[in-house]
Length: 261
Ligand SMILES: [Fe+2]
Ligand SMILES: [Fe+2]
Image (cartoon, rainbow, N blue to C red; front, side, top):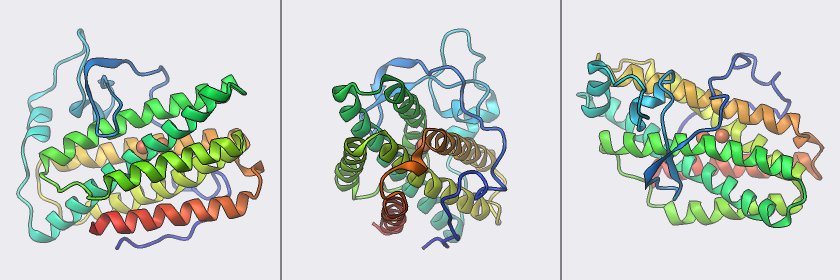
């Protein structure tokens, strides 16, 4: 099981090492005309300035992938059993986590688009969901390249994540944002723990530095979502402390379960 780190729910100041410019695209993503992710979403085109684009379709006019990028995304590096275990766990847990994130936003949007109470917040949620589509699309490719067994808990995570998203959205926009804050805090911590693991004795192959860059990119995206939630009054949600603690505890339990099952 991955080590846990102390956690507070104070915005930004809880993340001294992470309070820096985020990598998310400023413009909304556009989507490839065909294909779906394991979270049942469209597949976004990659932004050629970001590491994740190595695993995503490119639009006409974008620079082609380099030979090193093609090698990095198409070969399985030679891994020792210990390295194999680390990579397996990282990719299986992250793919499941991104699946859950997509379904949380799906649940929130299902409620918000029907209630039509606050168009601005619904647009914010949609923008964060669109960002998650990039994450799951890249991990779908990584899980194939590295021949990692996906979690057997897909159906459970989908149902629980949709219920969490819809349930918090029904409680109101602040509760929905508190859900985002708690989830993105745990995921951000988790990406950091994985980056530490990847620094240790990994093989000299272009796939590994690419994986590291993608984890950094996605972590920064998650922290941008965290900032968005705090800026939109997540910490003024009803029963904020209890709600946050329950959601964060649930996320940590899901990470631990997914790393094994
Ligand atoms: Fe994500
Ligand atoms: Fe996120």
